Length: 249
Image 1 (cartoon, rainbow, N blue to C red):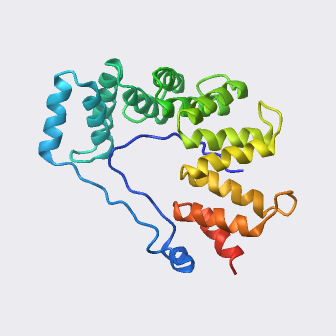
Image 2 (image 1 turned 30 degrees about the vertical axis):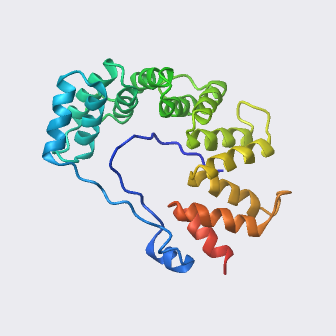
Image 3 (image 1 turned 45 degrees about the horizontal axis):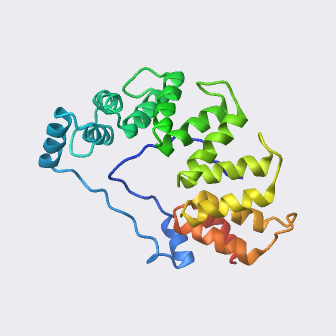
């Protein structure tokens, strides 16, 4: 089962990487998959954010931090991004806490410190910022920055899932499927994968496809496997594109 074990960073301007062009052609998905173009910030919008941040609009500080991290409208400057995320976080903007945690996780703009990142994710999570819960769950799942604790990871994945973060649903499904920290329950896992897939999380769709493709599973159903692999492919998962093409031959 596929579990997303890297950290999510929230950005306001982004692009989605879809399937390769060959897979798009094979699947006749060229019109279905629409790449979102990166929206570049203008000097005036950057200046406006700076003014708002200076006036203690802490959400603007975090937003501006994203610009500096992403190099959108300004030169990329991870140190400046960290400074702005900290200002946002200290002012109560939990996106800033989450994103500063990621910089500590990766050692970008700050000295690498996974214990510090765990503290920041917890602050974000306690503020009901569900990506913070998800990111903290991964640390507990992997035993990085905190002592490995499957029970705690499950609790946090559930909080993320209940807070409408589909990655939390997917990873909670993986825990149930593998019986990590809970009694193994494939039916529950499938419910969680479907919940993630219904919210357009490709990993959830791909995991459903894997189960339906497995001849050892009672749920074996190649038509459903193709359905979920196709959806995951449309959502940008190259692994599922390959699986769909193989099954559709």
